[in-house]
Amino acid sequence: MMKKIIILGTSSSMPTKNRNHPGIFIKFNKKGILLDCGENIQRQLRIMKISPTNIDYILITHWHGDHVLGLPGIFQSLSSMNYNKKLNIIIPKENIENLKRIIEDFMIPINFDINIIEAREGLIVDEEDFQIYGIRTKHSITSYSYYIIEKDYIKLDKNLLNKYNIKDKELIKKLKEGKEIEIDDKTISYKDVGYIKKGIKITYITDTIFFDKLIDFAKDSTILISESTYFFQADLAKKNMHMDFLEVREIFNRSNSKILLLTHFSQRYEEEMENIRKDIEEKNENVYILDDFDEINIYKDKIELKLKKKKIIYRYNEKTGEILRLD
Picture: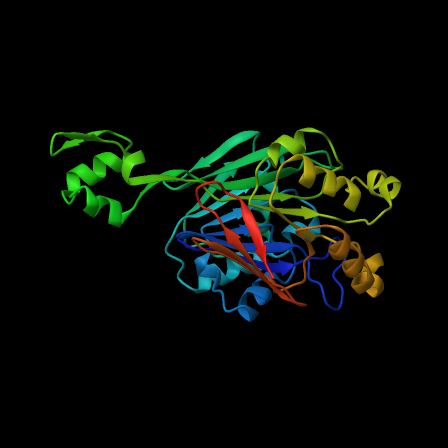
C-alpha cells in the first residue's frame, strides 16, 4: 500500500510569511499519523484537502507552543465533525495534564474516545502492519523523537505460484506465514515463490542537540525527516538546544538512511533560504530543503518527491530497501 507524507509546517518557533509552525501528516497504509501540531495546522490540512477525521494518531514531541498550539483547534473540529474513531495521542508523561487542561480550559465538548499513550524509549505502538518507536532526546524540556516502521512481510509472486500450481488458499496462507508446503511431491518454501518485502521506515527527529544515539535510532531509514534549525552555526545551535545542518548530515550519513528531508528552520534564514537550498542540494546527494505543502509519495517500486522547486523520482527496491535516483 502507498505511503504519503504531507509537509504542513517547516518553520521553528516563529512562523514566517511562507512557513507555518511544525506539522507533518503521514498516510501510513490505512492509518493517518500527525507528527506535531503547531498553530494553524488544521488550516494547512484543509489546503491540502485532508480532513482532520483522517487522523488516527497524533505524535507530540514536546510541549513547546510551536509544536502544540494547533491541538485545541483539531479537538474542536473533530468534536464538530462527529469523529467516530479513537484518537491516539502519544505524548511525554510530563505533559499529559497539560493536554487535559487544554480540553478543560477551552471547554471543548469531546464526544469521541481519546487514548493517551506515554512516549517512551523503544517500542510504543504495535499495529498489525507497522510499529512506532521513540527516543528521549536532549532539549530544554522533556522531548521525544519517533520513527514509524512497516513490518517486513512475505510477498508471493503470482507467476511463480502458477508455475508450481499453487492455488489453494490455505497453502498460500502457510507460505505467507513462512511455512513450507508439500505439493506434487515437492517441498516448497516462500523463497521458491516470493521474497521478504523490506518495510518502509520514516524517522522524525526534531528539537534536540546532537548525540550519538540518534544515529542508531535513524539507522536504515527510508526517509529521515530532521530539524535543521541552524546552518553552519553549530555553537548557536547547541546553545539553543537544537541541531546544525552539519550535525544532521552526520546522522544521515552514519545511519545509512536513504533520503534526508530538512525542516524546522529558524526564521533568521528566511531571506537567504534559496541560496542555502542551492548550496545544500548541489553539494549533498539525496538531501533536500522542505517547504510547506511538499509531498512525498512512496509506492511499491518508486519514491516520488513533489517539492516546491522540483519533482524527483527514485526507483525503490522493496527487496533490499535501496534507492536509485532517476534523472
